[in-house]
Length: 460
Image 1: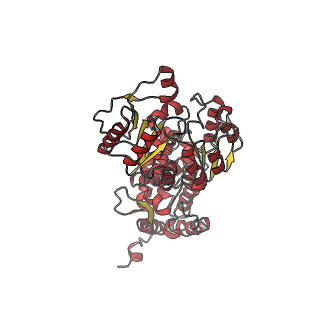
Image 2 (image 1 turned 30 degrees about the horizontal axis):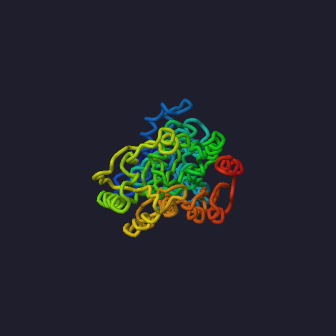
Image 3 (image 1 turned 120 degrees about the vertical axis):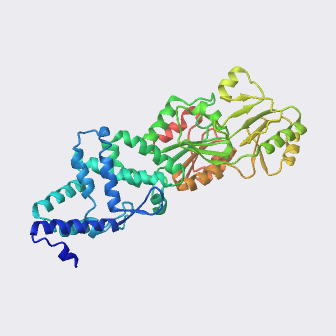
């Protein structure tokens, strides 16, 4: 028996309703780009519509305007019916979206004409209201339509984001209606966008300001001036990502930059990179290697002042001496005092104070597979794994987060900053920088004690 005969009841109105009902079963064959959460396959339009209809029953309490939930649920159920003929258009595919409105209007004309006139108009009105996204009910339904695939992406390691190479700006634009209509829910979205970028699932679209600390963001007294702090925070409001790149450990740095609250911290001279609270690069010595470095230092130089940066959960910072209280508060920050006897913790960086340059040279020859570098402002020497620099950290950061190198502006003053200033799109030397740093930079600004950074940021 043919389908036409089966769907023929002898009553025109009932036949129209039966045929429309059979036709919309085709939604189960319209495959979307979104993966199921178990990643076994992609979802279809019917599953998506059911899912967001149920969601619309749950999130009313977060809406900034009163919502007719029943009407919003109806919109969720019918909003993708026209894809039976028009097909699914991936939201982040610019080329595929060309002509989408015309395709969908033509599909609507064909599909809704199957129903009795007043029912066809009723469903079409719901579809058009959803599409216009002007009423509270339609905005609420649209929020569900955007929240559901976002949820799937966060639970599938950015399945469609990775596949399509999507970036932050595109996702934020898509989520704008949630930011407007469900701001509390958007806070969760924003945090998960940041997590997705740190995880490498989404590409970053914002520009980055990356500041060295000592001699750059910090004044000579190791504080950030109110003027510079205000300028940095205003730059964030303009859409810039704020980062620091320092030879200090992450835990040591926090005491100096807590008001800045940078999204990115490159610490220990490039041995560790954190983004949005997630450690994304760790280049460390093993515990045995750390113990061996300390033993060789003491063998060659005798009693040494020592500091060690670690990458454990708290990114702890260790030292074996207690500086004078004023120096401690000014320069050292939080740290743990230990004698380093049988110290076997994995370390990002080990530092020794060695006033005798001959001893330092001798030790350097014994430290294989290490970089052994002299800080220019004292007798301290930095030991990291070979080839670990601020610029290698920046390169890995940009690769992980999808940031074009040309979108990074790096600020610095010392020899360790030269590579960063040459690598990044814009290299900015402080007025107090070494001459070699100024030669490597694209621009030289005022000194760290004269709010050079603030004056520069005001021009952005």
